Amino acid sequence: MPPPIKSSFGGTSNDRPGGLEAVDEDFKMSDLGPPPPPKRRLWLWIPLGIVGAVIVCCIVFTILSETVLEDTFDRWATQIAADSTEESVGP
Image (cartoon, rainbow, N blue to C red; front, side):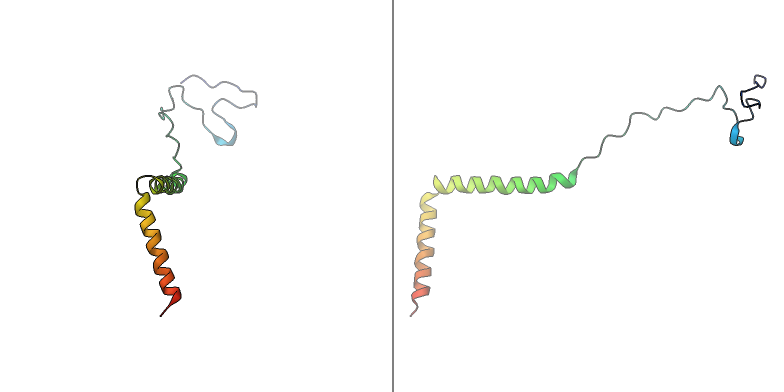
């Protein structure tokens, strides 16, 4: 260990303010590695995924009801209207 050196505050290099000791020259901080990856906002993606799925289902239902399944939806709507009319007229 080298001899103590006078510092500007009047003490030796080993007399640190607050009673701190001098750091050994051989001391090196260990490598902490890369920083951890940022957290994903899972709480945001779950509601956005649900809303997106509902929108896609509505679009698919609309397209199918106007093309491939048009006859089926027309039959269902006619049957519902006929049943509702019979219930409203009554016996």
